[in-house]
Amino acid sequence: MLTQAELHERFEYRNGELFYKISPLPKIKVGSKAGTVNSGYIKVNIGTKKYLAHRIIWMMQHGSLPTEIDHINCNKLDNRIENLRQVNRAQNRYNIGSYKNNTSGTKGVSYKANLSKWQVSVNIDGKRKYIGVFKDLELAELVAMEARHKYHGVFANNGLGV
Image (cartoon, rainbow, N blue to C red; front, side, top):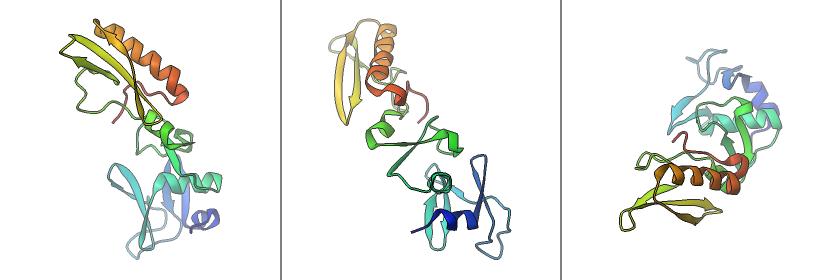
């Protein structure tokens, strides 16, 4: 298990990025930026293991590793400490933006052709809560935003990202 002290020996943190204090390989210079992008996240090799850079940064700043760390602005490459927060699984899921296959353009709003109306739903602790159906898309969007604010609080994401 890596310690905070060991991470401070290996890396320097500057504005969301890690820089090597100790060269991990002969061709990597001290002072060079650590990590490569893999699966949308910056990953750093320490020995034979890969670590997520945001987890290393959190550990360096706070001395502990929570189970979940959220990127507040949904940008997985933005590892500035002020963009990271400790969350539980549900809170982390609340901060997901709308998916690319979303056809309404609004998170939590889908068209129900059999009703000719827009349906609003939100996820709460892994369960879908149906809020209602609306004839007008703009009203459905507003209701969806209000529902996310009510049920997700500061973790509400109104469709940015992903």
